[in-house]
Image (cartoon, rainbow, N blue to C red; front, side, top):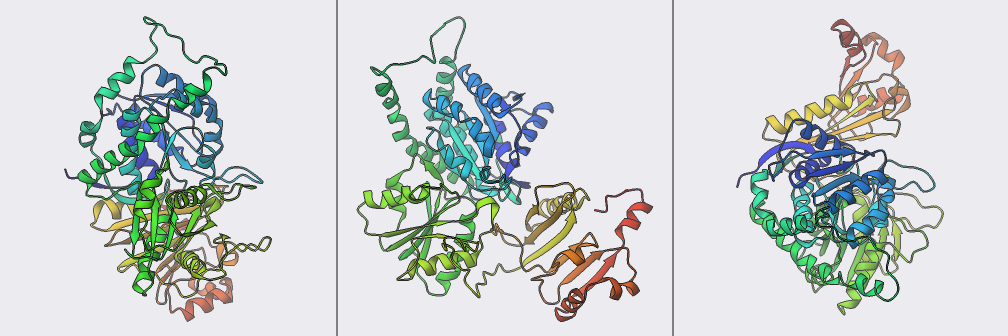
Amino acid sequence: MSRKFKTMDGNQAAAHVSYGFTEVAAIYPITPSSPMPEHIDEWSAAGRKNIFGNTVQVVEMQSEAGAAAAFHGSLQAGALTTTFTSSQGLLLMLPNLYKVAGELLPGVFQVAARALAAHALSIFGDHQDVMAARASGCAMLAESSVQEVMDLSAVAHLTAIKTRVPFINFFDGFRTSHEIQKIEIWDYEDLKPLVDMDAVKAFRKNALNPDAPVTRGTAENPDVYFQHREASNKFYLELPDVVEHYMNEVNKLAGTNYQLFNYHGAPDATDVVVTMGSSAQVVQSTVDYLNKLGRKVGFINVHLFRPFATDRLLKALPQTVERIAVLDRTKEPGALAEPLFLDVQAAVVDGGRNVKVIAGRYGLSSKDVIPADIVAVFDNLAAENGKKFFTLGINDDVTFLSLDRAEGVEVETPGLTECKFWGFGSDGTVGANKSAIKIIGDHTDMYAQAYFDYDSKKSGGVTMSHLRFGKNPINLPYLVTEPQFVACHRQSYVHEYDLIRGIKKGGTFLLNCTWSPEELDEHLPAKLRRQIAEKELNFYIINAAKIASEIGLGGRIN
């Protein structure tokens, strides 16, 4: 089998796989999951075929509750069904999650995990939504990169079909859903032989049919409800084996090494971090950096979160481990601690391991976590009086839980070019950068990554495009802080932002402005002029608005 390379974001990767296994898509868009159903709708309209040789039927409802109800009803009628959601959208589906799981219907919820509106709304990523659904009975599979979304979404669909347990397949909203990467993609012909067609036939045979009426969805009394609730136990007990089986099938086809819990680091590590989602890539590069310095550290990347396979976690954990820090990307006010920590702590106790376990909270609303944060975690873990409960990436001056970022951490990726573009929502900067990174990814032998950082206003707000490309795979799921190239597409930003902070010495700065070279001394702030001189930058100006006007592009200066 040879897989092709293609440049796409996490949403497109999830949609590509889901389309293959889906007969009905019940949809209602919500940021940042909206591009998934958009892709499905577009491909369906173009007549694209799934692995069963049919075109997906797309049903757009008028709310998330409607999409969840259509999802539930479609599964009861014997059609393999998928929906796509995030945040409050997933919460509005909760009653149906419990029903779909209780009735053992093999649907898949593709979730671009996102913050919940609590004291304020946020459209950005964390795990608050999926953690609110963890008791529903749906299996939960997590991915930490765009490539993992492509590879493991297939595992979610295949396992749901075989075990009848519905899946929440999730990845970090924006950080993975909107990050563009050059990845290897599945051909449906390679996935088709993996489908358990006997399970598909049994599912169809069990569908509601007016010619063979049955009673479902009854009310039960205390005499039988408890017994029936326990009757599903064996499905969940068998599920980790099935996930492992399909991960091994993927590993054979793609040359990967997916496990329920992937360990990376020193075989004799004393200190280990456990995490899931996009932070896993940050921890992995930090573990490599620290081990080169002579530390004995490692990390575990959690893929299957529900059911939580305690035996597999303990097997992945080196016998030498003395201390574990568990990182959760969620907050449960009033709880003893967050969910992943509680599960890991329970697993360690259950396995009789004498290991100290501490709990960290990070990354709410897409707050960046960088290698310096992870070094601080390992330092805190090894300290005699380290914090048992801590937060990363913020300054907590209320309960004083935060860890200070470590100083002097330099995780180098050789041969990497990093760029940052300052734009204005709807000026075309983001679109142009998407095109540029896809050209690099699809038409050169280089790897490419793009991430777009903008505020909730979207159209009309400031946008920052972060581009990286180079000869090696790029596993850096955080913002560019030391670019070689910076472009600013709006001249007023010279007074509002520190545009070239962190730029490498001898780098390039391009400013779009209406000023002539002679007027720059008058208009550029003294601080910016000083930075340009001290950093010995190559400084260029362009009047893109004038050029756009002359060639008929209007306000789109991209």
